[in-house]
Every structure is written in structure tokens, then in C-alpha cells.
Length: 279
Image (cartoon, rainbow, N blue to C red; front, top):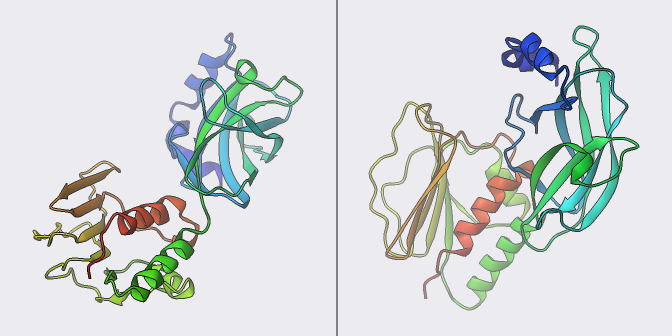
């Protein structure tokens, strides 16, 4: 991550620094996560059960002591403390000394379901807790076994003679390879949007931003999950349910790396788990 990825922030750089002078706001969190410039207040999705890196960028009023972070469960004003004193690895920026970019290495516990956590950032040497926090980053921590659980469900359904199918269309960078690696069975529909969806099926794919989503009648008991990079829509998710069918549209491009995208895997997991199999 480099300073020039945050060019929009520097149009008001001097104004921001001036506004910080004479206040208690000595540290301003500019961005967090792997997407440059991403809003720090957004929830950041990560897999549990290992060390995960979370990039962050700060604007400092003056020369500050090192920053550290404490990881808490998110509950009430402050939940259970999980890890204390995680260091912020950063390198000073000679062109903009007030800008501090670096990485928090988070030791995340293994979880059985998605769990909300919060990273409380403070100046090293200060007491832990919200009172001494200079910033916070909300997290959603997911099991790192989501696809393994899906593989088991497909195998169990086949054993008892039930039918549940997963189909892929479009580019879906890396998902086909990942599903094969995790032994999740699927049918490859190629590049084109499917003509119809049958009961007991989950169809997942993406569309380029210059193509609208075709009108499609979902059969009862079928599900559709589409990534549509529509520049006129905000980055949100719309879900329509009717006649035991589910249509989920994610208004953004499909992930570049499915193996590391906890949010995309959780969405895939949820829609498959909510789709009924048929005899």
C-alpha cells in the first residue's frame, strides 16, 4: 500500500491537519482493509483460525508513540478481550510525515459461526479500553471451513438420494478451481447467463457492468446469486425471496481471490444452506 493510493484524501490534507490542531483528536483513521481508500467504518470480513493481515492508514497530528490494537468480541460497550497489544507495523512516509501506513497482524481464533469483533486501536502505553481508544475497526470473523462444510452437505444429500446442484456461469475468477480443490461438486455453465433454473438448484455467476441482469423466472426451490458490477448502484446486496426461491444480487464485481474473501464465501454458504434439496 502506497501513499498515492490515497490521493483523494490529500485534496483536503492541509485542512484536515489544521482541523486536528488544538483538539484531542491526535490520530485519524483514514482507511482500513485491502481496498485502498475503503471506509474505515465498514465491517471487514476475515477468516478465523490463523494470522490475518489488516492494512490501515492513519493521519497523525504530531509525532506519536507506536500504536497497538486490542481485539474484542463485539458486545455491549465492550465485549470479552481476545488479544491485547497487537503491534502496528509501519514505515514513516518521508514525503508526508503525518501519514502513517502499515499492517496489523491479527491472531484470530477459530470460530464455529460468523462472529462480530472489534479492533480497538490505542497509543502504546495507554490503558486498554474504549476511553483511551484513538480509533476502532469493526470485524466479522467467519469459520475457515465454510467450503468444507458445503462439500459435506452435498455428499450427505447424495447419500440419502436427495438432489441439490450447484452451477456456475460467467468469469467467477478462481471459484471453479477453489471448489474443485475443496471437493464441492458443481456444473460449469460456461460464460452465458442460464436460460432457466430448476428446483433444488443453486446458480452462481457474474455479469459485466455493461449488461443488465436478464429477466428470469426462478422455479420454486431454486436460488440465484449474481455479482453485477453496476456503476449506477451502490455496493450493496439485494435479496428477493418468493415460493421458496432466493434471488441475491451483489452490486459489485465478483472477487479477485475467492480463497481469501470471507464475505463472498459466507454469502455462497448461506444461499446454498437455505436452498432445499429435492427427492
